[in-house]
Length: 421
Image (cartoon, rainbow, N blue to C red; front, side, top):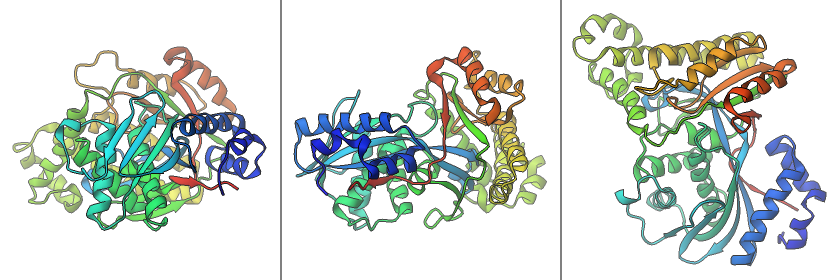
């Protein structure tokens, strides 16, 4: 159907939109209607014509901290915050006007990687276009006006949300919706690692593209094994706390985790730890300490243990056993703290993530807590009994600020076109 101004002005009264709001966000009809109307009004004032809406969520990592880049296992979920786009076809170029950010313009006939674009939104758009073209998919231009409440710097993957959004727009506009979810994740990963210049695994993009709670085994990055599960812990509130700090200057510390794990793997004449048997690794520690650093050995230990925790986490989610799930989350957090060592940057004395974890453990309603995502700066994830969630959130806001504590939900729908009627 054609989306008109009159239609958008009355979104709150539209049953189809209300259904989407419940499915994607778990409520908040007035807020979402205002968001969609704002980008529609801004978009048609510049581009006019027929428009369509797209939504791309953020993500949380439940378990599997820093394992995907060594062909490990992860348990992740898409969440109820998103990047929303109002889109119109356009000849010859992609233009993205994101509220609060400079306009992005990319010529679809100029798709060479450019190191001068590292770290930019232009690089992400160009990288997605290049991947599609290289792999035989159709590309074309479009104009998009976007807004996002995927909190930047909070470890819920605002960049991956943007990348997969671009993938889905191209998928729907020029490929008939035929591109599968993992291919869109791979295109996004390619854009971020090759064009954007940030070494990363495939976790973020996969979680956002797939939607819901996903178990992903990256033993094969060409065809990762994927299982989706229902989230059965409705009596538990998920709280994300942005403890402060900026990821911008931490790329080398993220990269060190991957390179040190691969350093250990190279001692066994393979590239990735997944190809090393854990028992052979443990037996080789006396010799390894003469060849690699102690930190590299500890990070490899984390890798092997974390893969086993992911398997245990899958069983707990499937069976609805929250006690076992909480034990997995707490074990993952402790391992990230002690072995992976990504709870605060080198030389940091503020130590906001350790503070948040320590304070959380004082609260009896908090059943599990751990560093979230890449670590070093940013967020923790807490699983809190519903009855104590309001008090916990209020206490954490006193320490970290009103705008840094988020109650979130698991979203079962990945990046999608919002089909209204």
